[in-house]
Length: 247
Image (tube, rainbow, N blue to C red):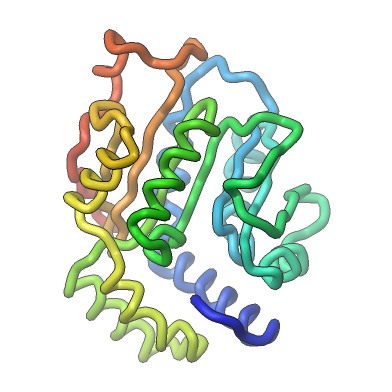
């Protein structure tokens, strides 16, 4: 959702987006990627969500970590001044997530960032901004980063329009969805952007998740806690379109 709006509309839109993520399995790619965490990492792991919105992804990550007895420090960052308020109101205090309003490029945490996540944010950015974000992720994430975003396809767009008519989500979602799918990504878009950001393609996975997601991930450390060298980069899946069908 781009542009200014009231707090009530912003909150309503984010709640609709959370319903969409639940119904269309939007959290599944990120949680599946986290299950591949390298072994032997120090805890608590600092996980930062860029463009966190109402915080629904981090709430899912908190639940995932709690079930696996993994200690985490969770931080959500969003430029919109309404986001932190919506996220705090929607999150039980005992979950312990920190909400930050500001530009992630200017974020200077006391504890270094281990993992950077981003969900449904990249398609709101211009190509130059995505390249900057990729470079920031490369420089910041000590363990890895993962971008969960939309795949540009007529099938995905039509499927979403059909579901939206049935569910009747917030009017902002109805208005923004066609724009979002037009600004979504193909595999070759990510190859071009990763190349511009000088991210080594051999260390990146591009995964297609149905319905309608195209996700990009990179582990910047191996299981031993060392940055991968040229000899260890073959441990990563090369850039390719892996298809994960809805179960």
